[in-house]
Amino acid sequence: MSNDDGRGGRSAGLPTRKKKGLAAAARRVTGRLRRLLGQEEADKSVEAKDAVNHFLNAMLGVSARLYPGWQKLLNDSLAECELTFDERRSLFEMHPIDDYFFAAVVALETAKLRGLYTPPEAAELLGEIGAQVDAKAGRTDRVVSDLVFLMLGRIDLGSGMERMKAPYDKAVKTVLQHIGVGKIASTRKLLGDVALRHMLGEPLALGVPQWWKSFKAQFRIYWNEPEPVYLEDHEIAPATAAPAPLRRTLRKRAAAF
Image 1: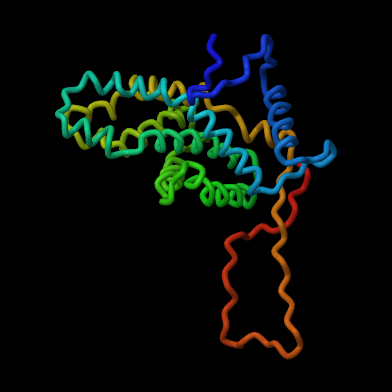
Image 2: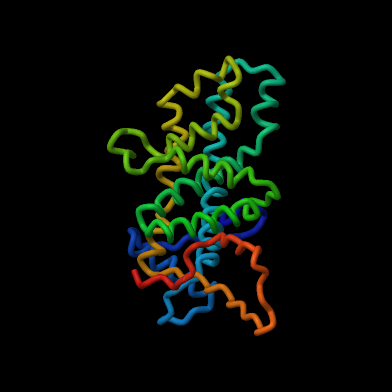
């Protein structure tokens, strides 16, 4: 088996035995974060922005691994449609489909935050993800973050698999809509093809790891307190000046989970 990592470099060989399950995944996350953050064994607290940074790096790796196979499935399904040159160009050349796919990977795992953390903590983490995800994708606009939060709004994990409304199906349908599949007569039928959407959703359903669950099993998150501002006796704030709104509402160290 080749050790080519797909980018011209050489990757480390696969181990002969690899422990499976949540506990093993948590240990791998623990080891990586301790090495990256330089933390001691006893310190299991991680600042939110650093946790999100490592989460997005992990999702970039997942996206890079899954996207080639997913792209082939998409191309094969569109090849069966009668597309003109302009229609094909509008689908494949006018849209950053790889960024849309990355947004789907991030959204599917981010949606689990609501069931793992308190609402204020989840809101803080969502804010960090929104602040970092576009730059992580190499973009200077908000294409990825806007799509992530659009998907989050459509994903209802509480009515997920039990009602056959799988989150990955909603993510796939959102990607297809953004590509413009519904705007072309010959491809519009694909949006309503549940079997096709589930086929395109399978790599997402099976390939995106439970990163936040593994992380939470080993670490707690904290947010740095803002630096206090002290005024001298002769420095009095103007009476008409309204306090600037704080972006974050949670500024205390989270309790151990």
